[in-house]
Length: 398
Image 1 (tube, rainbow, N blue to C red):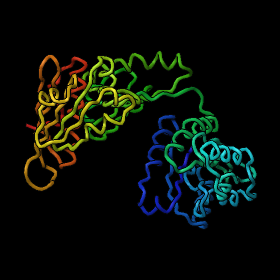
Image 2 (image 1 turned 135 degrees about the vertical axis):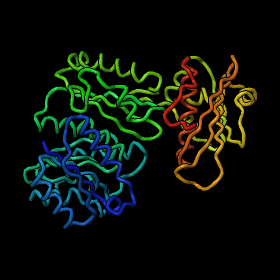
Image 3 (image 1 turned 60 degrees about the horizontal axis):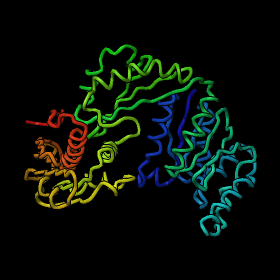
Image 4 (image 1 turned 90 degrees about the horizontal axis):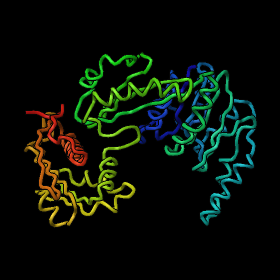
């Protein structure tokens, strides 16, 4: 089944807003075994958008339209979908009631222009939006089934997983279930990870279990995609491969699936009933900013300090925390450039004493600052889990 993603909005077309919605949708569709053949971006222009609908309807089997479902005059998706189908817009009483009640629960009166969001093409299939005022809908234009989604990322993402992808799988006659297993690692590059995982039976780019990598410094995401007849079949085939990947990547795996490195650190601190203080120099609070917003961090995170120099021992004593992490980033002098360097000194102090780790990172200023923050959190993770803190990473230089 050939799928097209059609994103609307002047802000997207002109580059004023980065189109993260497209990348998310394309990745999730790929994870589900759905092939995206075209990606189209169209501004808020009636003639251009109508032409794009008709073109997509002639070449694709299914089209996801993202954006243009709001209450303002530049939101055109419902109107032009109805025109492309040759039908009128009609009020969806159910959605009108939902919106009205939603505003009432917040003690507000719904603006009159929100009524526009309940006007759908007469032949449309309603698609629910559980967390927003822009419902989705589906219509057929040409030979393609069009599924319309709101541009608000968190709304689109939930609707994509719960409503859109299941409809597309049914439309394409794709049976069974899929799963995407993800390993997040720090310290190894893509080529090294590929070598480390070579020879695992059934695991390949086009194997029974599809292997993929996505590098986004400082981490590497290793993905295992599999389709099975049911959960039992899927688990039976995936479990041994998953265990082997975890074994081979070893201590470099910092988190899995929807976990994050900082989330793993926080969970371990809670398990061991420890409080944490963080001191930073040139990273300017990056490490603290990754811990502090997490749910439950207020019970663990006692102090964050930014200074010209930081000492884990002194910070632990001054803060009264059970454990202190110091990320001392000593930037080389000179202008920002690709071969810019920094010396990173990590200190971790607890009741048993102090552990240190030193590394030399090369890259632009932002690169080394990001790497330093990641290295500090990873060293803390390793220390908390009883793993070696001084294991060399690919990004170090002599």
